[in-house]
Amino acid sequence: MVALAVMVAGVVVPVRTAWSAPQVRLEELAADPGSTVELPHPSSHLGVRWRGDDADAVELRWRGALAAQWSQWQPVTISHDLGDEERGVILSGLVIAEDATAAQVRVVAGNPRAVEVVAIDTRHGPRRLVVRRPPPATPAGADQRVPQPSVVTRAQWGADESMRGHEPPEYAPLVRMAVHHTATPEGPDPAATVRAIYAYHTKSNGWNDIGYNFLVDSFGRIYEGRWARNYAPGEIPTGENTNADGVTGAHVSGNNPGTVGIALLGDFTGLPPSRAAVDGLQRMLAWKADRHFIDPTGTTNWSNGQRPTIVGHRDVGATACPGDFLYEQLPTIRQNVANMVGPGRFRGTTTGYWVLARNSSLYTFGDAPFLGGPGISPAPTNSIAPTRTGLGYWILSANGRVTPYGDAGFYGSTESMRLNAPAVRLEPTSSGRGYWIQAADGGIFAFGDAGFYGSTGAMKLNSPVISMAATPSGRGYWLLAGDGGVFTFGDGGFYGSTGAMKLNAPVASMAPHPSGRGYWLQATDGGIFSFGAVGFHGSVPGLGLANTAKTVQIRATPTGRGYYVLGADGGIFTFGDSRYHGSLPALAGDGAAVDLALKNTVG
Image (cartoon, rainbow, N blue to C red; front, top):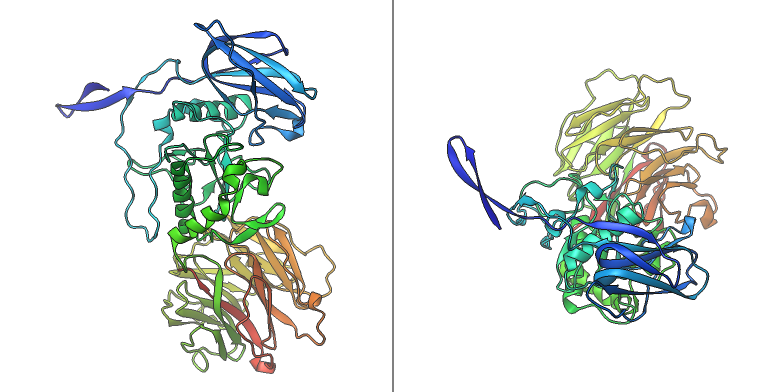
């Protein structure tokens, strides 16, 4: 460490400095099989890339400046975390090669073409003086049960930020996690190997950044992976933006948005990971599961169907990753993570629900409490929304009156306003400290901490607006018109609509997926239409029932792996992981059902 000093307001202030990690050097060199490739610099890591397929088998050897003998031939492990299958580019895992100055490649099987040696030096490049920052401290004030683990920051492991691409990062709500191995030995200096992987991903494969969100070494140390944002002094890297959406990495093709990718340094095809490495993996998995209400022993949607919320890479891709010896531990890892988080923490249970009738009658099922409603909220009533705790709700009348019950707060209403159309829906913000009121002409009225992002109030519509839904972030919403048209505002994404379809019955309501990456539309005959990254779990017509009442509402379960459909007669239809807690299928006339609210357990 080097001590410097600066003058601040006439006072000499010491500044702690240190030498940076060595600058990473990488060269891709043509390597005709059998010929010697002279490396332009002593290399700490070597990789091989070629055009071909998984049937190719290639071996590598090297020698150093002071070594007259070549190393033993070593098989190179194909890394499916790296290759570009569309272009037929295969990349091996990296090999630790201390101070290699020459390399040779030979073909054992197959017909690899355009073979190259990738020479990476993470140990001998130039260094520079940098200001030494204090180690990050664990932030206080979160309601999490699992503490955030310590993380070796990008600056601490020596990431050269100039190697990052210029594409802005993308983010998504986190709903699942993937476990990898790097197929690269850790070597004597794990941080140097992380730097080598970073260079391999960016400079050789052309990615925007390192593919993994986090990496773990054999000592259980966790390394920050893909850059998410600039953190405040002392803040431990989260891999998320300030809204807690995870930065999208490059580690599970077709599944990267919403997925945390954690890679253990090493190749666990023939040997198990260290106990400390598994412990570090579990600490990060538990913290993420606790923070984002992910059930470690549950399942969720992946590109190839329902799979565990914590997968090994091979579960969702054609790869051997994370190696047999790590993969076989995943059932135990999932259970250990669930034990660390504790019971009742996951967004997986609907423990009751409320059914609202047009005449303001309210019916409760399961453990949903009755806190008032009939005779107090003026009829006709159109909408009910629960508070986050499940210990309160708001009821919206067609005249714009908002009546709060239980722990629901009153933040204003449209009752005293002269509206062009009746009030149809009330949608609370994620904090519960505000709500939107939607009128039938698509007018949006924001109260409390709800933001206004636009409306269809000034548009000439083909059909009235019948429903709305807020995005998970609360920074946008969707509006649904009676002809199936979907209007997006704020950060609400457009994933499709039924506006151009010929339907058997008109649409009645919509429900967003908890991730915000899609939604379901529900028709009055109970037909369900899925758009975006959501699953189809069934529909009322598919049940083959006779004389089914008109359906009026759809509500998604907190996992997004199911939904409830409400009939105008009070009947409840459950699909996917939704739980049935009872119904009253005898409502009619002014007492017909108009809305359904779910009481969800979130710990």
